[in-house]
Length: 220
Image (cartoon, rainbow, N blue to C red; front, side, top):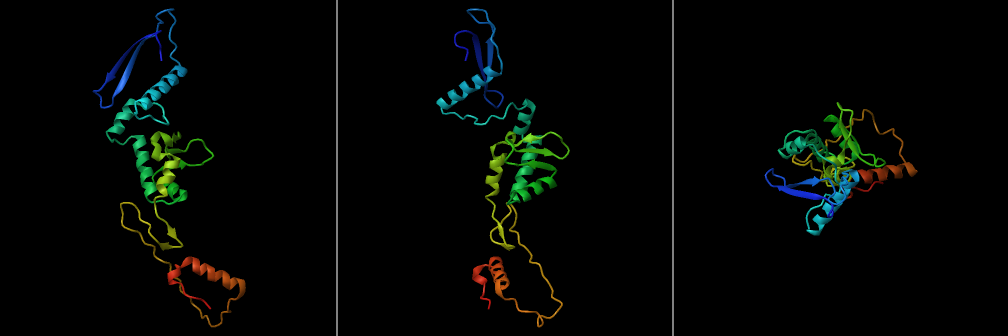
């Protein structure tokens, strides 16, 4: 990073629960007296070199860095305290557990006081509290909470087909059942005209779609 032009002292801390390094740099060039410009370009160069070194030593590399997290929030989340991000994660986890599509997922979050935007035309999916005006990009919450992660987790849920319960289970709860609607006909069918032709064929196929084949009977 600095070649042989700048003096650097590296210290590694092990006493905070998260290993990390500090770099103390003598910003004056040893040979020509020029000052080191620690700008954004230098930051990205440093991060790139760090990633390459980690890959070389077969260590974990963060593929999509989400920026700097406040120190207080970082340790609060590590302790499991109810931070802004932790509350969002909990709300998303619950919404995913009871949803099989975007509409259900969005409604489940709204009931918990959150507004989410998963529009694929947007570069970043976002979430915010109904009491807040600032959006939070989902990737800040972690990879499994970003747009693709949410869709992938939701696809693990089973589905309802034409009002029939096939194998849909809400996680950590008992299997749910659907109560069929009952209709009472207050008239006689004796005067009803027989349905024929394409209309009769249409109703027949609707019947086959609604009821499983093993319980279907021929209609004449």
